[in-house]
Image 1 (cartoon, rainbow, N blue to C red):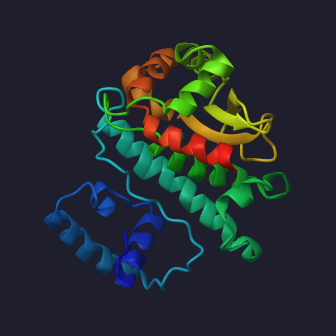
Image 2: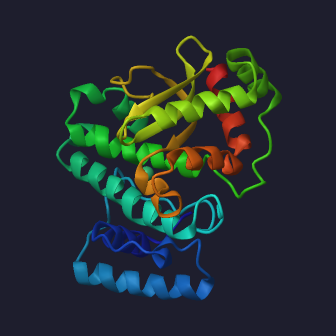
Amino acid sequence: MTRPPSLRTALIALTGAGLFTAAACGETEGPAANSASAGAAAETAANAGEEQAADWRFTLAPLPYAYDALEPVIDAETMEIHHGRHHQAYVNGLNGALEARPDLQGVALEDILAQVSGLPAAFRNHGGGHWNHDFFWNSMTAPGTGGEPSEALAGAIDEAFGSLDAMKEAFNRAGGGQFGSGWAWLIVNEAGALQVTATPNQDNPLMDVAGVRGTPILGNDVWEHAYYLNYRNRRGDYLAAWWDVVDWSAASERYSAAVEN
Ligand SMILES: [Fe+2]
């Protein structure tokens, strides 16, 4: 979405101040709310005396659906906090790390992640956090609307795991077995085959520090902030329920792109 410079600057000022809200997201609000938030944002920017943000800065994209779109699998409050607070913090942290590294400003995030072993830890933690959450939001859709894996992806899943259910079991085991915080992944590995893996913290399979590298097809966030309000400590229940919101169209497109490269 293209915004006028003043509003874009204002939104960045708001998010930088940790004030990102549903209204500032815009796309989940009605026209009146958008207009009101635009006015408030412009005023905040003027007060803050912000300059036009540099093009290299990463920004938090609005969710591709409403906060309550994934209910009852993931509740609206969890989505709002997860996106507006946790993800925003990763974006802010990544931009902060880039302030000190002009040589990396404007470099694609995937290229930064591929060399993260030689960079300050903030790039691994916040760069991974930003990439992972963008990927996560775009891996999900409203319950019952996610369709099925494409013929090509379904065939590759059968070849690698025996069946879709067996792949889900392996994925849930990886997520359930990840000690502490982290992610479960379905990837196309460096040999071109599907594989399930898990990473700690905000690591991902694009990083040169990952034990198993590859191209992510699906990823599930198993940090407690992703599920604790609804599921408490029952990570296994969250992992099992999550399949109801998986967007198989997105996964299938990623698979096709990965095997064509
Ligand atoms: Fe998260």
